[in-house]
Amino acid sequence: MAAPADVIYSEINTLKAWPRWSAWHRLDPKMDITYAGPESGAGSSYAWKSEHKNVGDGKMTITASGPDSIATEMDFMKNGKASAVFRFSKEGNATKVTWTMYSDMGNNPIKKLFGFFMMDKMIGPDFEKGLHNLDSISALDQKNKASEKVYEIKRIQVEAMQVMTVRKVCPSADSIAAYIRSMFGQIGPVVGRQGLQQHGPVFAIYHTFGAGKIDFEAGLPLDKAGKSEGNVMAKELPATNALCIDYYGPYSTMKPAYDQLQQYIKTNNITVTGSPWEIYVGDPGLEKDPNKILTKICYPVK
Image (tube, rainbow, N blue to C red; front, side):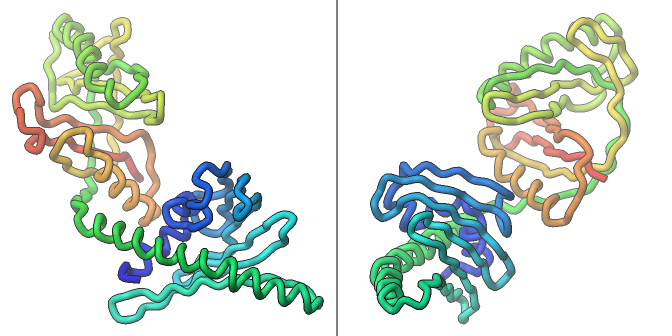
């Protein structure tokens, strides 16, 4: 395969990626799949149910996951059990992937003959299709990875600051901009009545970001402490260390920057100490080119 081993490895080691390349998933895209265990690696598993005669019901578990191989166990219910191993080796600029299956057919010579026929003649072509699909998918992943912008991740110290915030829950990312305008519309008059001054760019803290529920605070840094009024809360944000990325561009294409920052945190075993926040340095109302608007993405860390 043309892609490097780490790209191919990720496609196999993450079971939720199997529908992209597995021949059996493509036989029945409507099969009922239930995932369990970790997102990837040893202990992750999925169970499937299908009315397709060549798919049926079963369960697969990753039993071992190392840099050069991935081992799985499969339970085909009434059709028995089997184990399989993927092995990776570098060959020049390419990767050789070997996919093998093992199943104990017992001592009955007829069963052994049937087992050979079933695996070699029936399952073999599906293995070949799966590997060809994996080659195509991995090559595409590698191409996308090569063209992906790499962001500089900075570790900074954030000083304690006095702020006023409004916290709300909105249903979708498409609603955030309208909610933020409304929230700052509530903060502005309170700041004016109390004779306070803005002391830095506005920000938003994202406590929960999921489908149907985005729990966040829009905030304004101040020159001194204020007093809470109604939904507008005055408080001090404590000093913290943070990992930050400078992102230029529209909010709709911000996800790769978040992905890189989250992957960096995971790879380096860094402890996150709170909710991420965004600092809006640029003003879309003044700058019409979104690629010139700076948003700082930050995670508080130890």
